[in-house]
Image (cartoon, rainbow, N blue to C red; front, side):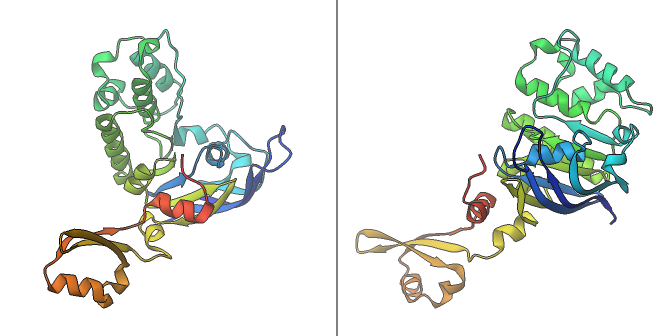
Length: 287
């Protein structure tokens, strides 16, 4: 697979800031990949997304997307990408359908029937309601389908499931995976560990404007630590709890003894989560 995005040694300083917000970031994203930026608020995720979407051009380093340096990007670039903001803006006095029809008119190519998209996210019966009456969750779903209107090759999704109930979050995640199956490349910006693990082929841990680690969620969770196993057993009438690493379980005399005597009452592994790994690498939580 070819690289859709290639970022090399990028720095950025906002005019009002004394120091760089982004420090020496490098990564690449392959065609058809879901790549996640995972980190807490203020980590630099949104700034990196603004660079990738062409909003910020005063960076140092190199950012190539579709083989074009982003400083030289043209308006044609926006025909190829879809952007779903965490706090989407709409024309409040327009209905949802009127909003989508208007945004569809801005593209030169063929667009998807907005009613079909609204139906997919459960908004078909609210299509003729003014967006000003929509809840945050409804606006989030509307913002998501707006990003799909023109069938873009590259999607930028910023906290796409924020504020959604589990059922609607599931709908959006399934639609994201559908886009991947269609060969779309997706950049997912989130602090939601579960979304990142469920959707992303690779994630970049961001903190303080730098990338601390890049890898698949599975590799990051497994790297550098040994899974712990917690087990309990009966000692007369008392229940005892002990913890042992998975690699040493077969050699643990205590475990072997209670296992052979049939005294074991429970056993489960305590695998580290992505957030555990993130905290170990950065000393900070994801929220």
